[in-house]
Image (tube, rainbow, N blue to C red; front, side):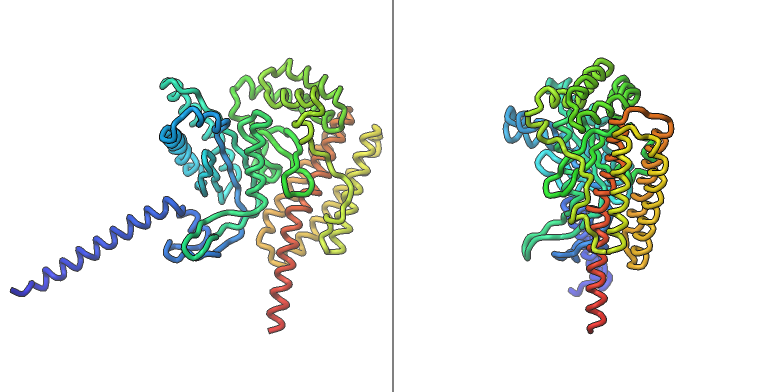
Length: 449
């Protein structure tokens, strides 16, 4: 008996509907392994179109979060309990990250690597929300008879390469670049200082309104594989209100103690830290510094980073005018530091004016070159220049107001001016230089063909 045509049509429609549903659920399942946000950043609208080697370069804020002392914690649990514990913790953190515009790139054991494509402020808000969610989670753990857990979070902002790596039968999405390495380094440093959140100076310079956050300078540190040193900042908005208010009120006292430590006046640094801890006894980072002062040959002291202030060959940009401008600017900054060191504050106004003029000229040359080369990260570069002048003006205000502590002032000159310039040359300028060289090779190739 022949099948009626309408039955065949209905059957075909049912099959098509079932196929679409299957494809939809399969795509949704794959998106749990390869985030949709990752594909969107790569410009891919269909997971079937992913290929090895697809990549895009862009500004990104990277967040690393890790459970403190997880190894010792896990040793008391069975493998099944370990998995249950990790999943119970991670399921708390994932929606917080998503709610703040980020997405999880990967889980690394008990660690989380999350990416924020749009805003470092969002990453910072997320970190604080993660700490708040952790407090709620720990309340439930304690009620169940388990000990609370703590996490450390490191945040850095910079230019990364997002793409796919692997082989014919196995590939993965990943993000690579110095910005990723520094974020991971900052997360590890939270353990050394006993603080929950550390950010880089790059993130600090990219924040929309840094003054809205409770942030203080914590240290300058070497990063493996990188020249120079990096400034490290603590974000303490998540501290209990009494501690947060005390840290805010005594921020200058704390930074003065650190200034003495960094110029190797360990005796005065220790005296200042003891006095500071009498005011803020719950400041773990200050206690770490005090331990360094009392055990100068110990492992923590060995990690202290020297501030570089002399011109080195590797700072060269390869562009004669810019290299000379950078050398002149660095020399002027060093003269200012020496004038402050010998208390010749009467010399600082003309020196500050000279530095401002030299920096304005230097930055204008860079901007014109980048516009000519159609540098895609011009806005980020200019933003760093703007932040430099903000901190420069802050320093000038302190000098004009009669700040008398020359050690403190000299240290801030090195941190805000010398340190900023050298890191800017080694990171932002160097990235532009690579782009510029690649663009010229591309243009030469096009002309040759």
